[in-house]
Length: 391
Ligand SMILES: [Zn+2]
Image (cartoon, rainbow, N blue to C red):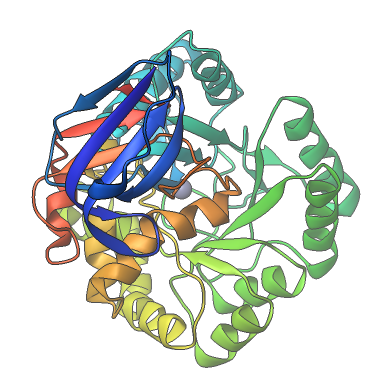
């Protein structure tokens, strides 16, 4: 069965086309081109032309950084101590909320167990509805380090190797390290470097040996440089960038996922947060946007991630991240690339983030041209994942 969508405008992950058509066969896109050139349906096959659910279509969007087991409750310390059963239920609900907001792929960067890995498998088998999930299992951190409340604590290269192997054995599709302290929880503050070059290199080698990418949480510039020099694939948050660090990141071709939305959301709700969290947030936010601007000018690869699940950062508000990236100097087209094809490259899913023959039929229909106003991405008219309408 072929389904043909006709739209006024289409962004395929790299460029825009008007009066376009998409032919979907099963879970994949079979053809994309001008409406006037739609290939004939082979004899004996059925084809259905679907009136476009919106004027414009973009590839399913990708959130490179979220925590599906968390709802974004104000008290992070209390929420992370929830039961595994509750965490699993929340993960399912948040995955669907993300999908209906146009996010057809999420990368989950640490849960208190393997529940998100299991959820991803259940969705992949068609047992549950949801986005594609690339989950890390547990994040790996140091004794007293950021995220110790839910992370796999590992000190020294040998323990770090074992911690990576445990996530691989549990079915992780990506490895997450914590290279520096952070804002939330009782672990080390943002500027503190946690892992040595030797420990980081051990983690990178084990992840790559298993064929997985490895990404790291890092605020402080020293920790970012250690990670980049050890061969990390991407850096999450990247709030305290300076010129020297941007140079190293660019030289090593490391991508960054700046998670602007979580920093903004914490600042917007300072009244409801613990004063330590507010102080840490203000310390990193002062340099965050300037750093992203600097990295963009230097040609560093930038992808979208919101850190959804952190306090006041909801899973269905993903579309604000490209808007915030545009405020840091990315053009609307570059922000759309960051949310689609660039993000697909960062999470390592070639068939996602593009609309082209052989790609997955993950499509988001919107009213209005997102290249003129990115905010239209916030209210999709319809969302398809694997060729099936989820909204
Ligand atoms: Zn996070």
